[in-house]
Image 1 (cartoon, one colour):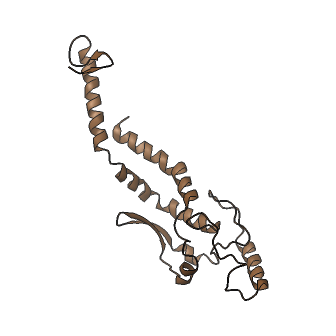
Image 2: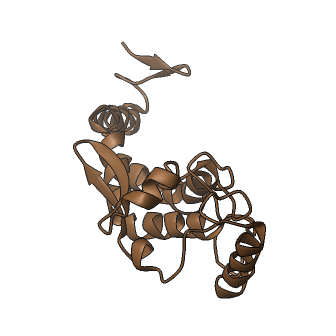
Image 3: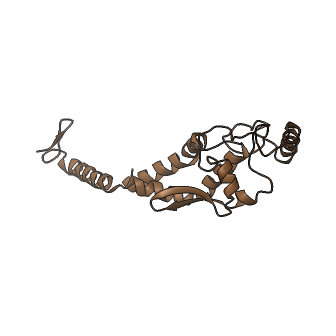
Length: 184
């Protein structure tokens, strides 16, 4: 005999209704056992590669690295510039060319002296979010070794971007897919 909350689920009285409920519980437990949350997550992320790629580009536009820090060296500390006057002139040029605000993302406005690695957008146009060999990768097919050498933490979403993606997109899709799979 199986008793749940004082109801006899095997026989007597309301047994036909409750046996049906027991079958539903059994079916639910089977669906729960068959639930592959990793597969659901990977499918959602695979559908969202364009959004994740855009978040990476927005992160660069905001001048942030994959740990959430400002990209360094800044224009004023970059050894490329021979003088502070050159550095300041380039900083002003970049400020006008790529204003540090106005993008739609979770990132704060970029500080004036912080680079965003944008000039023409060529390098950024090759940035892609990929799923390979059981992992997730952000890379660029327009690899510029000088950029990666100077800014080794430029690629990869930081916690701000990941949190934004989770709360604005992933969580709702994930819960919807889990509910659909479990039929609840």
